[in-house]
Length: 244
Image 1: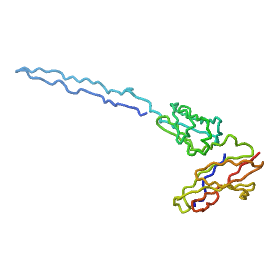
Image 2: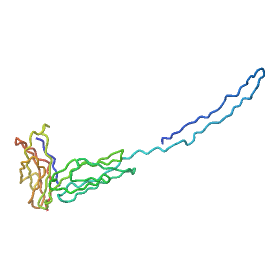
Image 3: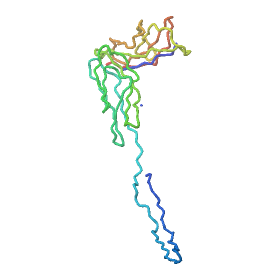
Protein backbone atom coordinates (compact mmCIF):
# COMPACT_ATOMS: atom_id res chain seq x y z
CA UNK A 1 0.00 0.00 0.00
CA UNK A 2 0.96 3.62 -0.23
CA UNK A 3 3.38 4.47 2.51
CA UNK A 4 1.25 7.04 4.27
CA UNK A 5 -1.46 9.63 3.75
CA UNK A 6 -0.77 13.27 4.37
CA UNK A 7 -1.44 14.21 7.93
CA UNK A 8 -2.41 17.54 9.38
CA UNK A 9 -2.64 19.10 12.77
CA UNK A 10 -4.44 21.98 13.92
CA UNK A 11 3.71 30.44 -1.98
CA UNK A 12 11.18 55.97 -26.21
CA UNK A 13 10.57 54.78 -29.10
CA UNK A 14 11.01 58.22 -30.63
CA UNK A 15 9.11 58.59 -33.83
CA UNK A 16 11.28 60.74 -36.04
CA UNK A 17 10.67 61.75 -39.61
CA UNK A 18 13.86 62.75 -41.39
CA UNK A 19 12.91 65.25 -44.01
CA UNK A 20 15.52 65.89 -46.65
CA UNK A 21 16.07 69.34 -48.04
CA UNK A 22 14.35 70.02 -51.29
CA UNK A 23 15.67 72.08 -54.11
CA UNK A 24 14.15 73.18 -57.38
CA UNK A 25 16.99 73.01 -59.90
CA UNK A 26 14.93 73.20 -63.05
CA UNK A 27 15.72 76.57 -64.69
CA UNK A 28 13.29 78.21 -66.96
CA UNK A 29 14.97 77.54 -70.37
CA UNK A 30 15.06 79.59 -73.55
CA UNK A 31 11.87 79.55 -75.53
CA UNK A 32 11.70 80.21 -79.30
CA UNK A 33 8.60 82.03 -80.46
CA UNK A 34 8.49 82.34 -84.21
CA UNK A 35 11.77 83.82 -85.37
CA UNK A 36 12.25 85.76 -82.25
CA UNK A 37 14.16 84.23 -79.44
CA UNK A 38 13.10 85.19 -76.00
CA UNK A 39 15.64 84.48 -73.43
CA UNK A 40 14.73 84.21 -69.79
CA UNK A 41 17.18 83.96 -66.99
CA UNK A 42 17.16 80.68 -65.27
CA UNK A 43 16.16 81.00 -61.68
CA UNK A 44 17.18 78.64 -58.97
CA UNK A 45 15.75 79.17 -55.52
CA UNK A 46 17.26 77.14 -52.71
CA UNK A 47 14.91 76.29 -49.93
CA UNK A 48 17.73 74.92 -47.86
CA UNK A 49 17.53 71.71 -45.89
CA UNK A 50 14.45 71.10 -43.82
CA UNK A 51 15.22 70.09 -40.24
CA UNK A 52 12.91 67.57 -38.63
CA UNK A 53 11.30 69.06 -35.60
CA UNK A 54 9.45 67.43 -32.67
CA UNK A 55 6.88 65.58 -34.76
CA UNK A 56 4.67 63.62 -32.38
CA UNK A 57 7.60 62.23 -30.40
CA UNK A 58 6.48 60.28 -27.32
CA UNK A 59 8.18 58.90 -24.23
CA UNK A 60 8.76 55.14 -24.24
CA UNK A 61 6.00 53.44 -22.19
CA UNK A 62 7.19 51.77 -19.00
CA UNK A 63 6.78 47.96 -18.94
CA UNK A 64 4.01 46.64 -16.74
CA UNK A 65 5.10 45.42 -13.31
CA UNK A 66 3.40 42.40 -11.76
CA UNK A 67 1.13 42.81 -8.74
CA UNK A 68 2.12 41.33 -5.38
CA UNK A 69 0.30 39.14 -2.85
CA UNK A 70 1.66 37.73 0.40
CA UNK A 71 0.70 36.49 3.84
CA UNK A 72 0.25 33.28 5.82
CA UNK A 73 -3.39 32.30 6.53
CA UNK A 74 -4.46 30.60 9.79
CA UNK A 75 -4.62 26.84 9.26
CA UNK A 76 -7.54 26.07 11.60
CA UNK A 77 -11.11 27.31 11.99
CA UNK A 78 -13.52 26.46 14.81
CA UNK A 79 -17.16 25.56 14.32
CA UNK A 80 -19.41 28.51 15.16
CA UNK A 81 -16.58 31.05 15.22
CA UNK A 82 -15.76 33.65 12.57
CA UNK A 83 -12.59 32.90 10.59
CA UNK A 84 -10.92 35.68 8.61
CA UNK A 85 -7.79 36.17 6.56
CA UNK A 86 -6.53 39.32 4.85
CA UNK A 87 -3.60 38.88 2.46
CA UNK A 88 -1.38 41.84 1.61
CA UNK A 89 -1.90 42.88 -2.01
CA UNK A 90 -0.28 45.76 -3.92
CA UNK A 91 0.72 46.88 -7.40
CA UNK A 92 3.88 48.89 -8.17
CA UNK A 93 2.09 50.66 -11.03
CA UNK A 94 -0.96 51.54 -8.97
CA UNK A 95 -3.21 49.44 -11.22
CA UNK A 96 -6.62 48.29 -10.05
CA UNK A 97 -6.41 44.75 -8.70
CA UNK A 98 -8.84 41.83 -8.71
CA UNK A 99 -8.51 38.72 -6.54
CA UNK A 100 -9.96 35.30 -7.39
CA UNK A 101 -10.01 32.01 -5.46
CA UNK A 102 -9.81 28.31 -6.26
CA UNK A 103 -11.12 25.39 -4.18
CA UNK A 104 -12.82 27.83 -1.83
CA UNK A 105 -15.02 26.12 0.83
CA UNK A 106 -18.68 26.98 0.52
CA UNK A 107 -18.75 28.56 3.97
CA UNK A 108 -16.12 31.13 3.00
CA UNK A 109 -16.68 34.33 1.02
CA UNK A 110 -14.10 36.35 -0.91
CA UNK A 111 -13.88 40.11 -1.33
CA UNK A 112 -12.52 40.31 -4.89
CA UNK A 113 -11.20 43.86 -4.40
CA UNK A 114 -9.25 43.31 -1.17
CA UNK A 115 -8.71 39.53 -1.20
CA UNK A 116 -10.21 39.18 2.29
CA UNK A 117 -11.61 35.74 3.17
CA UNK A 118 -14.19 35.35 5.91
CA UNK A 119 -16.80 32.87 7.09
CA UNK A 120 -18.17 30.86 10.00
CA UNK A 121 -18.02 27.07 9.59
CA UNK A 122 -20.73 24.76 10.92
CA UNK A 123 -20.61 21.18 12.21
CA UNK A 124 -21.10 19.82 8.70
CA UNK A 125 -17.94 21.62 7.59
CA UNK A 126 -15.61 19.69 9.92
CA UNK A 127 -12.83 18.39 7.67
CA UNK A 128 -9.54 19.57 6.19
CA UNK A 129 -10.11 21.76 3.15
CA UNK A 130 -7.10 21.51 0.84
CA UNK A 131 -5.72 23.25 -2.24
CA UNK A 132 -7.20 26.68 -1.43
CA UNK A 133 -5.57 29.30 -3.64
CA UNK A 134 -5.75 33.07 -4.13
CA UNK A 135 -4.67 34.85 -7.33
CA UNK A 136 -4.32 38.60 -7.84
CA UNK A 137 -4.26 40.24 -11.28
CA UNK A 138 -3.86 43.76 -12.63
CA UNK A 139 -5.45 42.78 -15.94
CA UNK A 140 -2.11 42.04 -17.59
CA UNK A 141 -0.14 39.95 -15.09
CA UNK A 142 -1.22 37.54 -12.35
CA UNK A 143 0.48 36.30 -9.18
CA UNK A 144 -0.74 33.42 -7.02
CA UNK A 145 -0.40 32.92 -3.29
CA UNK A 146 0.91 29.44 -2.39
CA UNK A 147 -2.04 27.07 -1.91
CA UNK A 148 -2.93 26.24 1.68
CA UNK A 149 -5.09 23.87 3.74
CA UNK A 150 -7.65 24.82 6.36
CA UNK A 151 -8.85 22.39 9.04
CA UNK A 152 -12.29 22.99 10.58
CA UNK A 153 -12.38 21.60 14.13
CA UNK A 154 -15.18 20.99 16.61
CA UNK A 155 -16.17 23.90 18.84
CA UNK A 156 -15.89 21.70 21.95
CA UNK A 157 -12.29 20.73 21.32
CA UNK A 158 -10.48 22.32 24.23
CA UNK A 159 -7.76 21.41 26.74
CA UNK A 160 -7.59 17.66 27.08
CA UNK A 161 -8.69 17.05 23.49
CA UNK A 162 -7.22 17.32 20.02
CA UNK A 163 -8.72 17.09 16.55
CA UNK A 164 -6.74 15.21 13.90
CA UNK A 165 -7.26 15.43 10.13
CA UNK A 166 -5.70 13.52 7.23
CA UNK A 167 -5.97 12.81 3.51
CA UNK A 168 -6.88 9.30 2.32
CA UNK A 169 -4.25 7.51 0.19
CA UNK A 170 -5.04 6.77 -3.46
CA UNK A 171 -2.19 4.47 -4.55
CA UNK A 172 -0.39 1.34 -3.45
CA UNK A 173 3.38 1.27 -3.00
CA UNK A 174 3.82 0.01 -6.58
CA UNK A 175 1.84 2.96 -7.95
CA UNK A 176 -1.32 1.01 -8.74
CA UNK A 177 -4.62 2.50 -7.53
CA UNK A 178 -6.07 1.23 -4.26
CA UNK A 179 -8.96 -1.08 -5.14
CA UNK A 180 -10.76 -0.57 -1.85
CA UNK A 181 -10.15 1.22 1.41
CA UNK A 182 -11.88 -0.06 4.53
CA UNK A 183 -10.72 2.44 7.17
CA UNK A 184 -7.85 3.63 9.37
CA UNK A 185 -5.92 2.92 12.56
CA UNK A 186 -5.09 5.95 14.70
CA UNK A 187 -2.13 5.35 17.01
CA UNK A 188 -0.97 7.72 19.74
CA UNK A 189 1.03 7.99 22.92
CA UNK A 190 3.16 10.35 25.00
CA UNK A 191 6.53 9.13 23.76
CA UNK A 192 7.78 9.65 20.18
CA UNK A 193 7.33 6.50 18.04
CA UNK A 194 5.93 4.62 21.04
CA UNK A 195 2.15 4.45 20.75
CA UNK A 196 0.26 2.99 23.66
CA UNK A 197 -3.24 3.86 22.46
CA UNK A 198 -5.13 3.01 19.28
CA UNK A 199 -8.46 3.84 17.66
CA UNK A 200 -9.91 1.76 14.81
CA UNK A 201 -11.97 3.74 12.31
CA UNK A 202 -14.03 1.43 10.10
CA UNK A 203 -15.32 4.16 7.79
CA UNK A 204 -12.96 5.14 4.91
CA UNK A 205 -14.93 8.36 4.43
CA UNK A 206 -13.87 9.69 7.84
CA UNK A 207 -10.86 12.03 7.58
CA UNK A 208 -11.21 13.94 10.87
CA UNK A 209 -11.27 12.56 14.41
CA UNK A 210 -11.31 14.20 17.84
CA UNK A 211 -9.53 12.54 20.76
CA UNK A 212 -10.69 13.56 24.23
CA UNK A 213 -9.55 12.91 27.78
CA UNK A 214 -5.86 13.49 27.08
CA UNK A 215 -3.73 14.34 30.09
CA UNK A 216 -1.41 17.36 30.16
CA UNK A 217 1.85 17.07 28.25
CA UNK A 218 3.04 16.19 24.77
CA UNK A 219 1.19 13.63 22.67
CA UNK A 220 2.32 11.99 19.43
CA UNK A 221 0.05 10.67 16.67
CA UNK A 222 0.23 8.64 13.45
CA UNK A 223 -2.41 7.26 11.11
CA UNK A 224 -2.43 4.03 9.08
CA UNK A 225 -4.70 3.10 6.19
CA UNK A 226 -6.36 -0.32 5.97
CA UNK A 227 -7.51 -1.78 2.64
CA UNK A 228 -10.34 -4.18 1.88
CA UNK A 229 -8.05 -7.20 2.31
CA UNK A 230 -6.96 -6.09 5.77
CA UNK A 231 -3.51 -4.92 4.66
CA UNK A 232 -2.17 -2.03 6.74
CA UNK A 233 -0.01 0.79 5.44
CA UNK A 234 3.15 2.11 7.05
CA UNK A 235 2.47 4.86 9.64
CA UNK A 236 2.19 8.42 8.46
CA UNK A 237 4.64 11.11 9.51
CA UNK A 238 4.35 11.69 13.25
CA UNK A 239 2.38 14.69 14.49
CA UNK A 240 2.68 16.25 17.94
CA UNK A 241 0.30 18.23 20.14
CA UNK A 242 0.79 19.72 23.59
CA UNK A 243 -2.08 19.56 26.08
CA UNK A 244 -2.35 21.99 28.96
